[in-house]
Image (cartoon, rainbow, N blue to C red; front, side, top):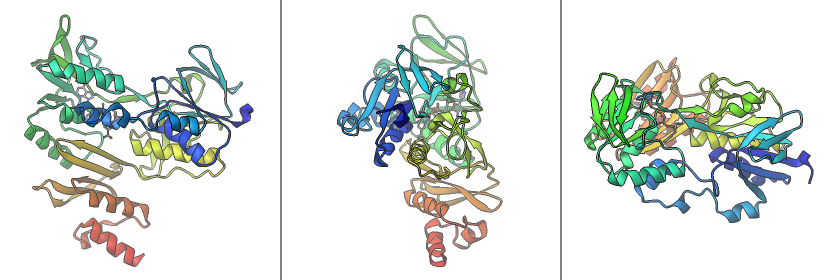
Length: 409
Ligand SMILES: NC(=O)c1ccc[n+]([C@@H]2O[C@H](COP(=O)([O-])OP(=O)(O)OC[C@H]3O[C@@H](n4cnc5c(N)ncnc54)[C@H](O)[C@@H]3O)[C@@H](O)[C@H]2O)c1
């Protein structure tokens, strides 16, 4: 089989796995190689900060597919790290010196966790969560830790707190939790829920140093307060993994820059998932998204392009998280929102926050209201997008509005 028929996918996370699976689903008959730097078959990360951390899901439940799948589909799994892309020669070189030729190359290199730029950040007992090994280390450390401090009140920090099985202290630099992804109404709701669950939530507090000896003992906050800590979980966001692309001369700007078909400046190289900055229809701007939905849908989009049926990427972004005993589901993006409405029973903890830009609905965040989330995704899939006045006429009841809209349509 010649190199003209070879697709190499770099990165065996959710998007890399989906790319190779979708190529075969679409009947791609050439050589398919998935290169990853973690041992074993590709696995899903969402349970790492939920059921796997809590010990209610085992390793097999993480696997995206068993070994048989890759053998049956003739997908080669290569363990290793790509060191360089030789674009003129259409080859990649692995760190062990192996060279592989490609016809199409898909960069699914994901992101890496930010580190805390403070003294003491490398002390034993300061951990992070990204891989299965990280989750195993955290689980083991939890059992004998007395004081647990979580730095960062985003998805990982809050999911970790919810599934750690004990009270923790959450330190968030901004003045509200989940500030990157949610409205202030949702942030307030989750701050209440986490406090009710027994956690201490400190807002507007950075970390200036970590102190200890043979291990971490204290977290010093920006106001000088010192918190006792024998386990510190750092969850302060990610940076996209773009080194390979940049060194190969491909444009990078908060992610590997791709066009509407997720192609880089080199038409034979695509980038997908956490590492890609793409022209986002919903945001109306170059955007990088960190979510399973985006990873999976972008992988499918690239598989379609490689197999000869390219469509511009236009999937609706959506997210979910399980924390503090509640389910938060988000449909759409909040960028540019200028009005919000809370619909449902906030006191009973079952409600949605509807966000509008120029009187058009752009995002719906649902707390323990899966029916609203489904209705929102159906509404966003149709044209025209719901207007404020029409939703007001349905008393901001999304299911009701969906009925009216579908009778009209
Ligand atoms: N349910 C989900 O969708 C889910 C769950 C887990 C992880 N993830 C993904 O994993 C990745 C990492 O998650 P994350 O929670 O680390 O990132 P995040 O961006 O969601 O949250 C990071 C938080 O840390 C805060 N922060 C930054 N610097 C700080 C400092 N010095 N002190 C205190 N707080 C600070 C930020 O304000 C932010 O609230 C993200 O890509 C995320 O989307 C997603």
